[in-house]
Length: 394
Image (cartoon, rainbow, N blue to C red):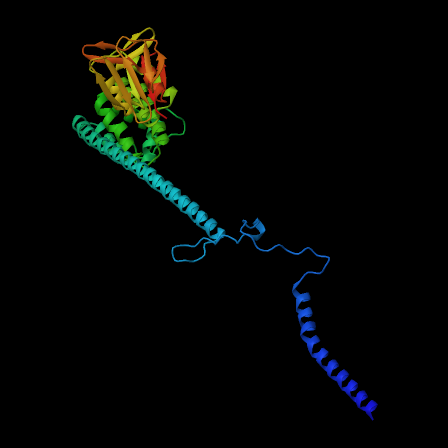
C-alpha cells in the first residue's frame, strides 16, 4: 500500500514537472525565431551601428529638384526648353531687323524710282514745250510757201510715217511714203526733193525743234534704245542736209539716252570739229554736258575740272577746309580728301598718289577728273577728236 502511494506521488510529480517545462519553452522558442529573422547568420558580418560620420555618395539623400516661383518642379528639360525659346526669340528679333532693313531698302528704291519718273516727266514736258515753240516758229517762217504743208505734215505724222520719211531723206531704197495732196502719185524722188527743200528752208534751231523734238514726243513711250536709234537716223539726215549744228544737238540728245555708247561719243567729237562749236574740253556725265564757269584744263596728261559741277553730277557732298586747304568729297560710301598742290590724296584714309595735284584757278578748285570718277566706280573715256571726256556711272 505504502509502495503504491509512493508510486502515485512520483507519477504526479513527473506530470507536473513535464507540464511546467513545456510552458516555459514556448516563449524561448518564439524569441529564438524572432532573433533569427533580424540577425545575420553566423557566416555574415554584422553591420556596425550608426555613427556620426558623413554617409557615402550612394547613401547621400538626393538634392531637391529646383522649383520655380510657384513651387513647381523645374526640370532640366524645362531649362532646355527655355533656352530654345530664347534662341527662337533671338531668331525672331533678327528676322524682324532683316525685314525692317528690307523695308528700308524698298523705300529707298521706291524713292529713287519716283525721282527718276519725275525727272522723266520733266524732260517730256521740256521736249513738248520746245517742240511747240519750234513748230510755231517754223510755220511762221514757211507760211504761204510749199514748205508749210510739209512742216505741218511732219507734225501730224505717226511714228511709223516719220520713220518712213527719214528713210526717204536718207535715200534708202524701198522708202515710199503714202501719197498726199502735194504728191498724189507718191513718187519717192519728188517726195524727197519736197522734204529736203522744206527742211533746208529752216534754220538749225527751228529744224531741231520741228524734227528732232517731234520725233522725241512720238518716241516718248518707247525704250531708250529705240529713241537712240531714231536719233541716229536724224543725225545722218541733218548731215546730208548740211545742218551741222542741228546734227550736234540731235547727237547730244542721243547720248542722253545711251550714254555708254563709245561710238556715239566719237561721232560727237567729229561733229564738234565740223559744226563750228566753241573749242575746248567738254565733259559729259551720263550724257549730260556739264557747264563750268572756269574751263577744265590738262596738266601732266590729266584733265582737271572744277569740283562743284562734278560733285553735283556725281551726287557728292563737298566740304572745304580753308585752314588745311583740303577739299573732301563723300557719297555715303566713300570719302576722298584732296589738298591743293599735294600729289597725294586719301581714299577712306588710305594714301593714293596723283598724276596731277589739285589746283586753284580764279577762285575755283580744280581736281583730277579721272581720279575722282574712277575712285567712285565711274567709267571715264577720253575722245581726242573734239576733246570729249565721257563719265558714266554704273
